[in-house]
Amino acid sequence: MNWGEANASAADFKVRAQLIWGTDDAKPTKPYVKELDPKLRSKLRLLKWRNYFEIKDPRFLDNQTFSLATGVSKRVRISELCEIEVKHLGGSNIEVKLIGEGRLVQKVSQALPKGEYLFLAGNVKEKTNEAWIVALSAIDE
Image 1 (tube, rainbow, N blue to C red):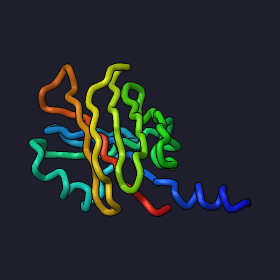
Image 2: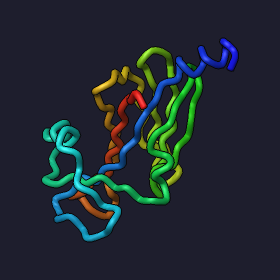
Image 3: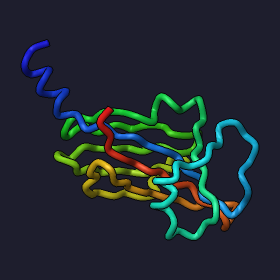
Image 4: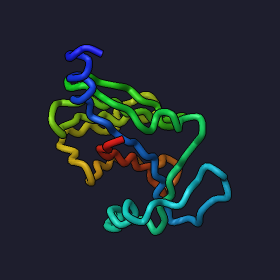
């Protein structure tokens, strides 16, 4: 590996994306619906739903963790209907576009320091007691 390659990989910003379902309903019995980590659950306590579950659909597990070089964007599918486009703006700053059913739902630019989360959410059209939340975190892996 030459110096340029080593320097580029050291500058990569590593991100984890988690798909969360907020609901007033009980946990379904589907194997890909998991209990949410208590630390992450505590960050969501101010939202209106009683229950939060992580969706770990095996078709999209490979997309949950990725790296970005500064100035680079990456579009990642995290479910059948949901994609995110993440751009590393430098340092801990990122721009995220939440895309649901092919349409831009939300766009956010902010710092994402390690240990913190960035949340983007969209309602479920058919139900008022549910929402889909994408939680992004910077990681060391």
